[in-house]
Image 1 (cartoon, rainbow, N blue to C red):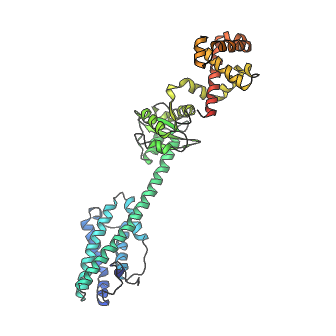
Image 2 (spheres, one colour; image 1 turned 45 degrees about the vertical axis):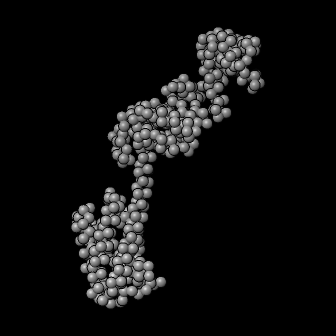
Image 3 (cartoon, rainbow, N blue to C red; image 1 turned 180 degrees about the horizontal axis):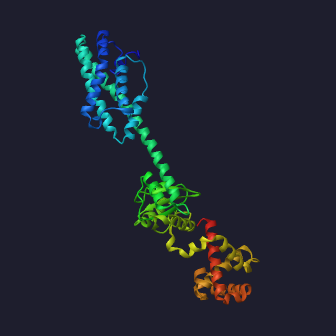
Length: 395
């Protein structure tokens, strides 16, 4: 297969169906033909009607000349990078690929008309001219395909740049303290994200943030933050219902923070993180504003841990199994204000068992069970102990 004559290859044949006289005649037309193609493109494609100057004009002219010379064999080889760069530039200029493809169609028509005229004048047969037309349009299809690749490359690059800007915006918005609104507005403009009046943050466990995000309304921002992912939802009117469905169907744990002004995004994130800690590992949504007491316990873990150790110190001498039973009984006693039947029903034990355990608790805790402040401290400590065990068990 002789690569010197690509006009043969694009017609699907290596036979010399166009003699050297016709090829020479076409080569002589190339300088004029290139200018004619460029003028036709300017006249027939509105987006190219302006004077072709700078890098864009040079790309169109050099691409046209190289394409014609490659086709007729006046230029050996050649790189598809020229045509990929045209496609790349079209995306950067904000035009659709249809514009460049229109230019290719116009160029192919003009080139075919002048080439066929030159070939006919040199004595080429009608069959040879038909094959020349087939080869020309097949060749243009390849050039257009190379431009499509360049356009796709530009789209990927642009998407990567936009994603980096959005990640930077998310990081800035969730920082404490956040930047001033002017700085935030500039970052949002670069990220092509309209600053909403209010927003809410979700924290999603595992690697499911992208799947959850696709189920949420609005132009969300999302990113990895430590061991979890955060999603910022603008104007979150229906976010609770959407997040609940996503958590159930995807089997992921989600914490939802409160709806806040844009400048308080870090607060919504903090609450969402704490709510996420309360969500069952098997999946489910915890709305921070519905679990404020539990959230408060999680907000100061060091202090709560010290309180738990001090308040529950009387149980240190008990076995692990005995301690768990006594803690459950004491919490039920505090919850039901000492009503033994209600305690027995909650714990699914006989009332006599409850009376036995309560006697043991009075032996261990003494007068502190009668002190309102002591009972409050005990309930906080016991609730935290129960939540800690549940988290450790993954429930």
